[in-house]
Length: 335
Image 1 (tube, rainbow, N blue to C red):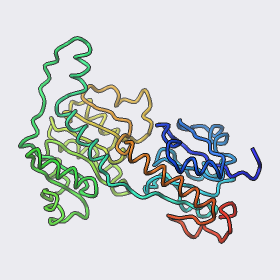
Image 2 (image 1 turned 180 degrees about the vertical axis):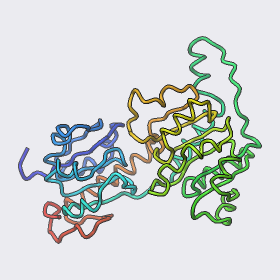
Image 3 (image 1 turned 30 degrees about the horizontal axis):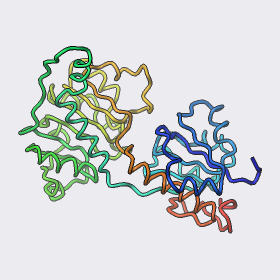
Image 4 (image 1 turned 90 degrees about the horizontal axis):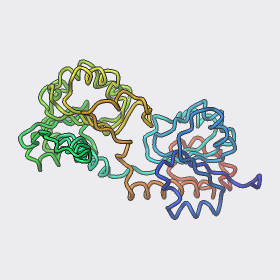
């Protein structure tokens, strides 16, 4: 590999999707690209993968990039972040090191809305366990939950939560919503009634979490909150794992409530093979599939590699730390 050749590493391409977008081919004409399809864990793995990289493409929040990772990537000049959520990325440290960070636009959230309802319906009608029973030769007598007339509680009535709430009306459900900045007017526009979090947990037959993860929402649903829920209520989280205390949830499930749980997000991802959540029959587990659909992955990888190309050309775009950009005729000298 020529010493002056720009080097790009794509991390955590679990779906093996990134090379399918046109911008990947264009970027490959300007740089040497290597793709990592599994999570890196040890210093040795990180150093071998990114030690000589000039740029990395980060898929969402799959890998943390903080002081340790920066130290293992001494040649790094640019990060192309897919999406705009960066709790995994130490932006201040990147800026201090002169590493430019660009993001891609958010999507409409429709894919996460669709997954939320897929999980909700699968949980309400016990579809995974019934399906497994049928494959085992049984005729499972599972009794499902009728949605009509039930109450859906939406925690976080933003871009995604609003759409989830509106769909509930098509099932003739009542909707209550809670959020720190939520107003009566915004709730009404989504067909919901604004209530406190405690009231939502007490009244809802199904609780769906759609809050942003931040210092205030981390652990928002803990032991006291789980105890407020109806014993047979269903709980769904397609937002971020740490919003619900995993320790409290596991303890609660061992005690027989809530009635069912569906999760797409976790404190640690990928979820360890021996994790206790894998052992409950009334828990549906998805592998953070909320955004992982063909159209969204195509849009995001296309935008991410376009950002790489623009950086190499010396005209970075969608930069979220402009103070890290130094005047240069070429991306090779940026930072």
